[in-house]
Length: 495
Image (cartoon, rainbow, N blue to C red; front, side, top):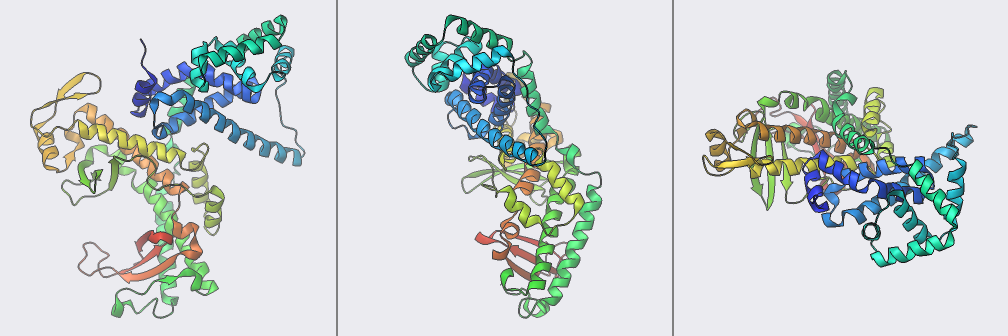
């Protein structure tokens, strides 16, 4: 007996692409049939089916009840059709206004007859008939997908047959048989998912390090110039006050406000490039990574660091119990574009366009999916680090291995663990999780800019001095802090 939907969903959530492929194989024709019902075009239905499965993979973390996968997949397919239809309408209008005629496929004569015949049926009967003849699905299987009883499916199918002549029914069967999904559909869907999740490095500009350095330099110079122009008591002399009062940017004079907005744009661009370029080396130099787990306020965290102990730091991320996009609902793309309008840096705008090109559908979808996957993998790692020295743990499916004593001791005391000391099975999980965390951070920064940039007129700016006893070269030097609505802030040195 095959695995249940729940078992396949859980394995797919854990990164098992073959388990997701099994779900594709199980429902491919059901989704294709629904796609044909919605589009009345076999080619559009194939495109719709592939996009629906990719979207389903991205949103697996949002599925509360894995047993209800089929109904959830049906709703995703309907939503994808609605979005694609809206996008296609906009494209067609634009082409017509430009004097171009969209290139449309001409259906065969039998397809036209079948389409016209099915159009005479009521919608429930047409859908049931399509799902039955697309792959011979049983009444129970169709009922599960549509959320109705098998008896209801039987009644609708009988009613549909009564309305169609025998020769038309034969043509329906022939049309569906001739336009069946190819055997490689499953492979194509899984390949599309693989490309989506793994192609971040290729979109990064080769001049990324130089661009990051230039933007950081431009940002510091801009803030230094703004600080020199700030009226009292909002700017200098900081030497006497340490921290100047907050000032709302909407209260600044027009010219100064424009300069602040430009500097804020450069600060955000440098922040994104820090996520993409400066964080990349510790992914490539994976063996230099240290990890540590800890709990705080009921949440579980993973700590990535470049040195052992609790002083090294690269990133700290929550890994449970809650899952999903940690920065919430992203703003609309047009609001982001408007906020970035003053950021006239062609190389950077090209980078944002390439990164956005990775993301199908609603902003935040891929970033949230990657983050959820990272959380699951790091929880698996933590669960396989036992507190007692010498205890055997299961790695993967039925493979057991002994963890080195230094790893067991570190896990029991909460100290850092070098990834070099982990068994290969756990090293692979951490390597995947680190890459997913990096990709999620990059996309979140692109798709979800901070409120002090998107809602600039409501933002505040504050200048101050770092403490003199602070470690590092910034001790006693100037910084600027940007705060948006809800106190979301970002601080950067301007020395």
